[in-house]
Amino acid sequence: MAAAEVPVTGLPDDLRRKLPRYPTVPVVRIGRLAVDVRHDGKGLGSILVANAIGRVLRSEIAAYALTVDAKDEAAAGFYRHLGFLPFGPVDKALFLPVATAKKLLEK
Image 1 (spheres, helix red, strand yellow):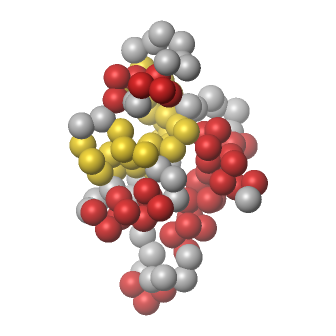
Image 2: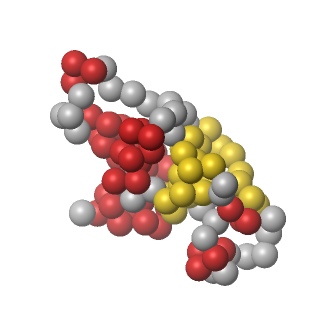
């Protein structure tokens, strides 16, 4: 995971309207994470994402969202299944607002 920022112009209008009028927002970028194919389908990917969310929530550094650049459509589908939304013009660039991520962990 790494601190980053993204332009607000890539966010959906309904979310962008709720933000201060800055050109960018702080995010946490999740690097590539993977599960060995021998353990595919066991929920380990979701656990890794939950761990990343927990780390962001415990951090003292403010972030609006978690972002990820999915390597292929299967990975993008995995993240969309977890609630990540498309970001900007690239369909494999996805984000999850921290407020939404927090609700996911509370379930």
